Image (cartoon, rainbow, N blue to C red; front, side, top):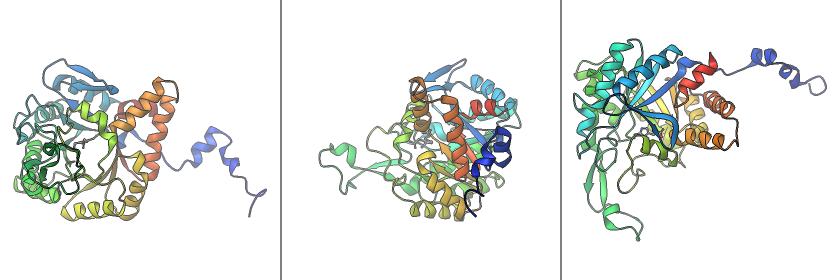
Length: 340
Ligand code: PBG
């Protein structure tokens, strides 16, 4: 049957009709709020490239978590800005590391908050890479114009696994509920699972940043977390934005290694990857609306080029429609307010 018998506009006539037939809904419980924890007390420092996002000292983070929980958001993911950086990422796995401190404080003040710990080394390494750096000639096809120091290095995979596993166990000890590795070393989910089990954390789930692309959209985050690589880039470990089939392989391997949940990152430019992952895998699927996605909306809204709230909610809804059941977003708190 076709027009005039069919008129799809009949069900679009009023907001109540539209609500009745709506296929996708956002809920505060499915949002995860990222927090950047810094040393000190009483600190709430806005990130220049991410208006509305702050570096928070532990005490301020606890306040933020309380407010977030009241709005119906059940989880936060923690990133740390350590006091000192070195070549073995001591701040990432230290007993009194910044995220460990924050996790302890949050779990003792807001018990039912799900605390996720981002596991990566870049924020804690003096060179800003996500693994151990070894100098050496690996510069196949490196730009001839680049100075040698920037091309002749390698991110060592297997040795980095030990530090990632150590970090994960240390976070679990501090009360982190979900371990979320974002480093993109091969074999890290298996290494982390093994280490957690051995330390008695066999019930601690792993949310793997399984398909994480080498993206320009992480720019503002690197300012927020002070984690920009001091030389080179992340293309030898994060994925090529051109590759969808490889993303499926990454996810499959992480599931084999013991991932409990999987993630695609960034979100909006990679909706096809989210949809393909949803189609193919049955684990809970998360997507990360990253710093650049947030910053672009904020910048356009400041210029009054877009309606900020409308675009914020539409971007989240569409990420969900593509198939993400969980969304990590800097809008978690604000979106929850609007959903109330
Ligand atoms: C750590 C990490 C990054 C992000 C999450 N975890 C940065 C990166 O890989 O450079 C990006 C998040 C965002 O941009 O909001 N490796």
